Structure formats: structure tokens, C-alpha cells
Length: 352
Image 1 (spheres, rainbow, N blue to C red):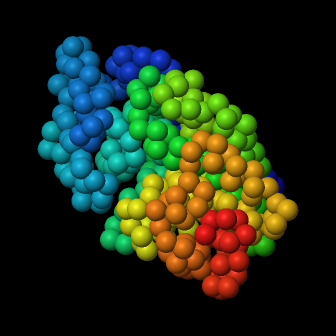
Image 2: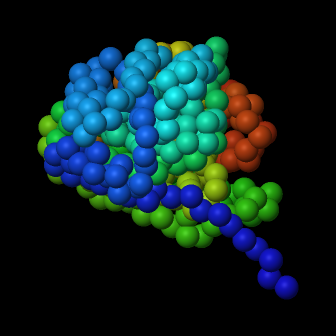
């Protein structure tokens, strides 16, 4: 008897395009969210978009509560949870980049309340996924949470975001290639549950970025459109899979280790991009398609070397040789690679 079942949680509405920030209250009304909202943002996004959203709520007679967070941390999550209870709010709205959106997502999940995602930068696929990434000490935790009920991505605002944030988002998507390769390997060797549909969607998303790499340029709203669509697709792939597997493999383990070894030196997306070059080489060898990944990253001005990341060769090697220790997730790194092998891979790919 066939007994397989799954529960896929996806955003009900995804609104992307020029000037759509002004449609935020309409999107929320369409969701039938009622009561008092809590807007979670950070200083710069507050000026760019948060204040406009608060004004829009007030114009329709709402009295939104506002929390401005300075850093992504579990303390910040608790602060938002406490504020939501104290202010008696009914749903949350995350406005900004990774910090406020991940924090609002976790707080909403804790309170079992609705959450709307309003990104001001296309820096990672957390804007639509059911996962949050929160640093703690010298490590980073990937935490499951419900995805947003809706996403409102104004490409006019996102196109004006710092270019390095956009290239980090692109690199994060391109790394889906190696994440899916690791997922297939884990399915073959460890019988890890695998979804052909989620894997295909994730790979198609990476392909979209690689094919358009030459046309993704600073300040172009069309580029913001392409990147946001890719980030949304990646988040949906994770929701279909019920895990981060379609978008997180050994390249993410490498990045998490760099966060511990060389904290604050590079953006997450840039780190996983370089990690993807290394792990693609491990999967396919000298004649593999790792060069296509490297060339696409270079075309969008994303780092492809340790020097461009702002880390040392030694830090790259340490991260690569210890990345398998991060979590119990089978990847091409297996039980780890030794220093000599890591040096060889990093040199042949030009990372060091």
C-alpha cells in the first residue's frame, strides 16, 4: 500500500516588481490578516522602506508596533517575541535584509502567527524559505520555521541596494548546483530522502543565474528582477523538499566554518560561492564544470579566491578540512579530507 505523504508550506502571494512596496497593505488585506502588525526592521532598511510601511498602516487606521534590531542573534529573536506579546500584536512584518527577516520569521513561528517578508536587498534565499540562519558565538544555526505568508519585493529598492549584497545573493543561488550534487550523492550512498522535483527546480534556478550572469549589473532593475525570481524559486524548492538540502551542501558547511575561523570577513553568499567552486571540483575533477561556476561568479563580480574573500589561504584550508564536522549531513566531504588534498583542490581551482 502506498502511504507516502508530505506537507508543503509555500507563500500564498509573491509580489515582485517596480514600486510594489506601495501594495503592501493590499497584499496583507488579501491574506485576511487582521489586527495589529509588528514591523521588524533594522536601521538602514527602516529609512529605505520601513517608515513608509508604518505610514501606510497608519493611513488605513492601524497602529503598528515597531522593533529595530541591530544584529541577528537569539537575543534579538527573544526581544521581538517579548515585544509581540507586550504590544499584543496579531502578525509580523519583516523589512530589510537577512537580519530582520530571519528574526521576524523565527519570532512569528514561536508565536504561531502570520509573517510577511519585505526584502530590501537580494542577498540570500531566506526571503522566502522556511529556514532562518542565526549566529551564536563562533557558529551559525540553521533553524526551521514556517515560510512567509507573502513576499513583497520591490525591485526599485533592491536595485539600489549595495551591489555586494546582490552579488552575494547570486552566488548563494549558483551554489545550488553543488548542493544538489551532494543531495544526490547522499541519496545514493546513505539513502537520504530525495525529491526529483525540488532538485530540478533548484538546479534550474542556478542555471537561470549562470545563463544571465553577463547581464546582471549594478543599478539595473532588470537584474534585481532576475535575482529576486531566482531567490524565490530556491526558497520554494526548499519548501517542497521539506529541508534545506536543495540549496545547502558542502559549500554551506565550508561557509559556516569560515564564519567560525574568520568571522565577519566576508558575506555568506560570497563564501558559499567560493565553497561551490571547491566542492564542484571534488565532485567532477579537473575536467568538471567547476570552471563554469567560477566564470559565472567572476562575471557578476563575486569573489572566486581567498584574497577576494578577504581571508587567508590558511583559513580556507582549515575550513575545507574541518567543514564536515559542522553537522550530520552527508556531502562530498564525507568524513573529511586531509590538508594535502585540500591544498591541491584549492590550488588547482585558483582559490589560493
